[in-house]
Image 1 (cartoon, rainbow, N blue to C red):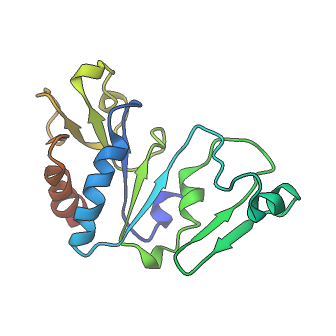
Image 2 (cartoon, helix red, strand yellow):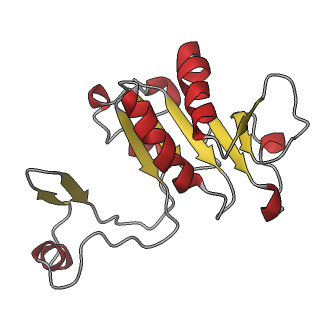
Length: 176
């Protein structure tokens, strides 16, 4: 599966660890929802994520060999699938598990090396190298400093979530 096979726009947020990707997403998701958008999210983790906990029925049944294990309640559903081979996930394979009829936009935290539109986050104090020179999929940079960037690349204020929201609504979604 590639981005051409997705039914809704996908927009990523790429940055060095500690730049504030999750913090910014926490601010822009409610604002996008206030605009009537249904937002899905995929977050890449480099850790061995444990959703269920030792002693819980779902954990015990998963350890016994059931895969996938689905937890369902009136509030939410979680599916835990054990992989037979340990390998980095592919963004577009992961997106295939989304019910895209239920979302208008999928935001992605991480998956920096995948080819899809991304907003780079940059904080001067972290002294991290910029990603955009080596990633043609960067469409904007949200930063706390003035940068000299190429024409066609939009600069946003990382400390003003509303500028990121306006960019997403008027320039990203508006272009699709």
